Length: 109
Figure 1 (cartoon, rainbow, N blue to C red):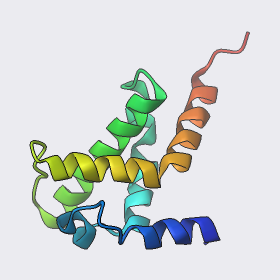
Figure 2 (cartoon, one colour; figure 1 turned 60 degrees about the vertical axis):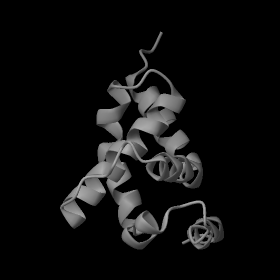
Figure 3 (cartoon, one colour; figure 1 turned 135 degrees about the vertical axis):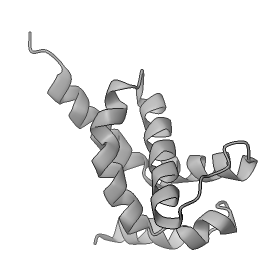
Figure 4 (cartoon, rainbow, N blue to C red; figure 1 turned 120 degrees about the horizontal axis):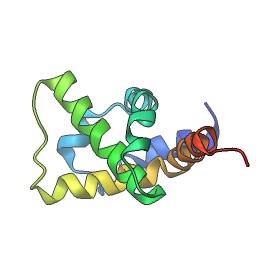
């Protein structure tokens, strides 16, 4: 694991994430789930920003549902703050995923 990813994981303890999600999310497992859903969300996205938001939201919903058998409250402001925070944490990885999918799907002229 490189130093930058280690620092990101340490920063996870910051108060920007609600205690509910901080106790439940293992970032390594979360990142593995991100990789599984990247192709499906790509086709449903209109832009890089849209892709990041939708992939993090879908992964968070699936992660919490399958690990704890509960749904996240999408009306709760803490949920949206957590999604924004996770987008910031995984920003570089999400950008790379989007650009990789974009290169695969772009027609060669």
